[in-house]
Length: 482
Image (cartoon, rainbow, N blue to C red; front, side, top):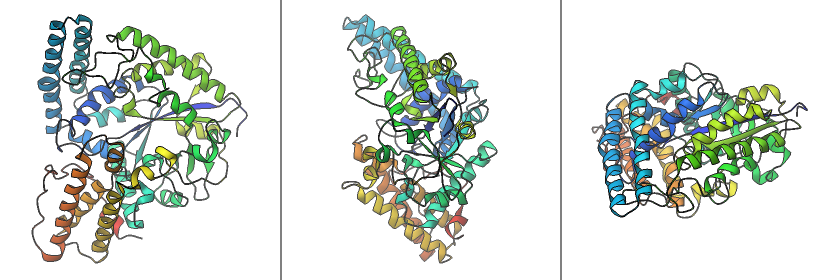
């Protein structure tokens, strides 16, 4: 490891399961509209010119592209016909109840959505182009639909995820710089060989279970024999932000994510008071100074401190997250902390060779979130669908070609890590299981069309939208090319 002072790499992992056109309240495409309004649009202004690494999953970009058309109309209607009136209704109800401070907090938050509509129009409804235009930012991609790669059943299925995802990134952003976010940081030894075959130069891993929090190994990138460099994330830094009990977002002045009004609005802070935006932003600045000071101490003797966060944490789960990030970017220079993209960091710090343990950044740092009892059938269903799709492609069953394409897209949708994650965490009722069941039915129908020449069936409820915008750069050759 270099003995010069180290550097801090902030990695923002931006992802959304394919929800465009798949139900609305309480689960479905409103997740996308909320993320665009409260996370992605605000962060675009914060990130321009900053040396930050942003991972954009292909499936998120599929949906952002769709918003240039009719999906964007639905987003604007959501802001104007859903968000605006419920803010008015809840503010009026709070005033009648003698809670003027809470009513004022609701009315202030309504401005967020009005600005989100204006910003969307100002950016010509094209967030992909907005990300492409960011200066200094390094853009990473990921597997096509955020599949847990070690749980895939075949080499062909793995190629389908990687080749499709990278192809879409190249089309959208003009090049692939080699940075790839492993979905859920899920790694198994040997995976780097497949990544190398697709031009991957760097990926993140979570080795907390192997070395413990705060270990020096987390500051040392790992050179694999196959070529790609594994960049450990530093959970000690991550937990300053991503810890629902002890992290910064749990502090009293920040907006309470869990306590809500009749229409799910949030006018309280974590201490039970009416939310005070000025007080919260001031605290975010204090926490930014604390974060940068800790980072400075961590890299005093060298190394690359990689702090990776889900982008939705900043603005959605932690409402003040964008203000915190802006302050971190401003404070870094004052504390002598050099902010770098991952590629810049790898130019400063010599990678070392050492074993990488199987891992993920999920609970337990293993794969149990996605294959434990209770959700294992989701993984097995996806693996069975993968085996059947690969067999159909290998047997030359490409007539009608639309049927194989349909089967492959339904397979990609099934392989998303999100369904098992939501089911394990009990976050969305029966929505994830309904999505799995719907994609399985459509997948079975598409494969049936290959064997009996029947028409490719329409999507079955609750699929509805027929994956109209998923994986436009689908690479069927990956299913048959060694």
